[in-house]
Length: 236
Image (cartoon, rainbow, N blue to C red):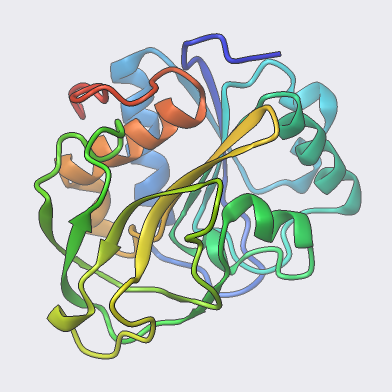
């Protein structure tokens, strides 16, 4: 099915059955504006019926944007799994890690599951892989304000490419220690998965650096960029 080397048609899924972030609308707007600037279409939905073989066919990527809880039907789970196995690109943003706890495949696709977080506060992201298009525009030490997620287990294992960690010495309440991944990606069969734990606040989605981060992750997941420095392009 893929990878075709271009980003054209993106499904942004925002259903929540648990906590709902008030930044979801800002995230959808940011992705739509990135699409307008970079030549791809964005369909946003909260309807689990959108996950069928016919609906997913031909899409470049699926984004779970701050989803939470159980958000797919069994048929939808099966369709998403088939699509990814056939080369689909998946991007999870922020509370996508708080989603589908009862579906083991999803945990493996994402790479780690949410465990908890301290209060929103400034911290420093340590870029580990500046060659990735989601990271190439960032300083190696990136000061950022967010809700710093802890995970039930580290995603760092064979097959997972950790792109950045957060420096727990620079904020209060971190629970993972000296190695605390917050951004990573992986191959998933013929498909790809990219995850960023960032993106809690509304104003994140108007920040050029974060928009460019999302664009780079999306382009990598869709197979449109492999990892050359500067590959993400302008944020728009």
